[in-house]
Length: 226
Image (cartoon, rainbow, N blue to C red; front, side, top):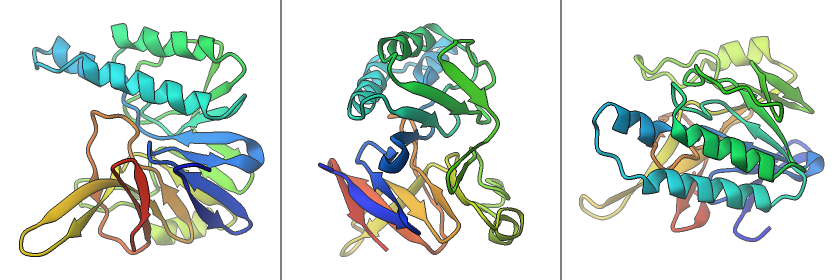
């Protein structure tokens, strides 16, 4: 698949794209995490100058991702929205209606506090599909203590599932000579869970500081890192 890199999970394959999405061809399912739609409008509502072009760019990225996979199930891994609805919310609902051959599921995240009602958008707390259990927050995640997840809890509570999550906005930093460094969004995988990077352009990236397989996103490419 052009521009994507394959990551194997047992007998299953996820194709990782430079826009931060992961595609499971076996079930024609596209996973997207942390769009944070409406975040720029939310900031402007509180008097913080934020370019409207951020939202325009996010919508263009979503359109391209939907169009890449005909009649796919689009599974949002939480934080599709950012707090209260605003005028930017309607643009997504219009886009969902435009892609009426697709199906859409939102696994609710901590910022999805005001989800608009729409017949084409199913909202759930978690989603089991094949070998995957889709959650927003990895179990045991604690930002205050810089803990991305509790691996022992995941192994004991979900021994038969591979978790797919968002929430952490994972990233990676490559260091060069001297003080040179490059920070990028990244996919993260270990033997028990995968965490997708934040899809939204108005989001950050945070080093998880745990061992695993990282795939960085740089200049429209996916890079297998470490």
